[in-house]
Length: 295
Ligand code: KIV
Image (cartoon, rainbow, N blue to C red; front, side, top):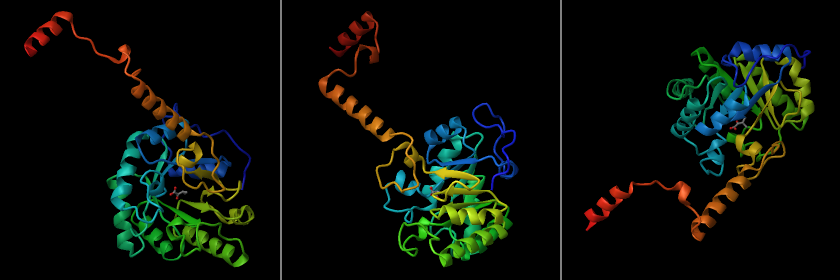
């Protein structure tokens, strides 16, 4: 990839311009990295907004990180829409992508279009994401034809991890790498505006990049993509489940949260919270009238 970096596209709190598809394409053209993060609620969306990210994904990883399911498979469309609506309320400028959950788009083009429309109409998403090549290519084309931008997702696709042999890197032999390539190129040809590469060898990414005209966002796919995405709870250290090799932990927020709640519990038990500064007052004469009223 990598054209010489140019004047950066402005972003962040001071930026009144919302991220758009042309601006994302321009970032790829200029060789500016696209920053994407997941979010699942109003406060995480506000954090993403203030940190100046370009794209926010309401990932179905939220099934595990905020809803406590053992995988992404059980989450329903209604649950995803509730998360996405909350994220929408916390965002101004980042481009908002909603993840179509497992079982909500595979059966037919009509099903895929109907679900995608719900993400746009009910949750205010700018685009949707779906996983895999194969029949998902037709679904992507149908959604794009219905006027909704689609992000593809190849490599490790957690919704079908069982069929892939588990949560492990994909494309690690020539045949499997060629399959990743075929899926990515088919999704591009179907009209996807961008594609996620998850857990594939960096060298496979490097070989594929010259063939992709749309922005490629990597997660465990090396440094040669047009941008990176991380799961909010992985990067901040909020989730205590298994963190994949590719997830860099920038903070240990869970430890801070546990320490805060533990301190609160200790103070309540010791009688040192609440203190006078947390109390409301009442005028002396009003208090006398009140106690008299009580008899
Ligand atoms: O659900 C999710 O968080 C994702 C990202 C890992 C791309 O699909």
